[in-house]
Image (tube, helix red, strand yellow):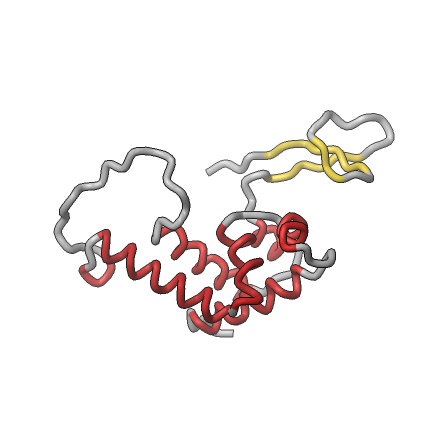
Length: 157
């Protein structure tokens, strides 16, 4: 998939989507990049923490926990194939159990930022604002949560 790139102007109030004016600098931003990928690419997350976040995101998607916005055309009954001979409903339930277990392993104080950044795709500044946390505190909390999720998924360190 080709990344979505857009030139943004850097100003003191944050990035904007206008054409850069004279005396300002601009950068190209991949709008499709996840917050986890962004943090990992800049050295704020380890490979293990990224893998834990991707596992959690995969289970979120497989469990179909996001709100559905279209009609579902899945078959009503299908023969058991795929992941250990589970049918699609059983795979969805297994993913839901893994997701719930991983969030429980993160703990109640850490699960909020974990869900917002990994599953909802919010940036850390937005998550900190929504949770009414001090600026730059979310990165530390997210790293702790991802370490616990990595232990849950048994990702080697």
